[in-house]
Amino acid sequence: MEDPQFTVELAGASPRGAAALKAVRTVTGLSLWRSGQVLDTGAAALVTDVPFEVASRALQVLRQAGVPTAVRCDWCRRSLPEDGSPVDPGPCASRSWETAHCQANSLTSCDCDFCAEYGPLPGHTRT
Image (tube, one colour):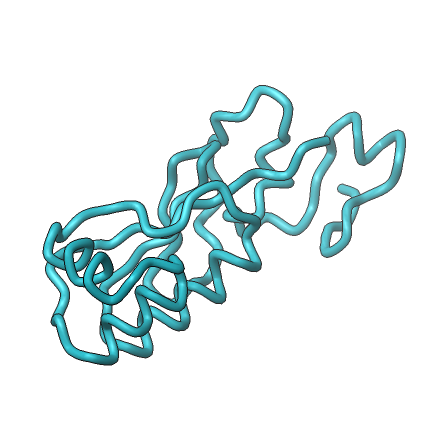
């Protein structure tokens, strides 16, 4: 089963200070000049198609520098709340991933066929 990927997005106008430029550069690998251009756009995908853990670390680096960002699940298209906690249970747009297994979701139990056959995924219990 394939894990969902996440995108870290710029969520609005950002201060263009040294800390913000360095944070964007750290997360994206862009030059300082290009990082400034990205910050000026106001809305851009900074990191795409990364696992949840990578997106969470990037979010922390950017927010510590005062850059307004959001993490969006590429399958269910939902954005995680400001505090980085999982979103409320809801439909996931994936055809191969059960809603309870989406890492953007706050569900911790599942009754899907996969969990019935192979056991619950880490962090989940069988209902």
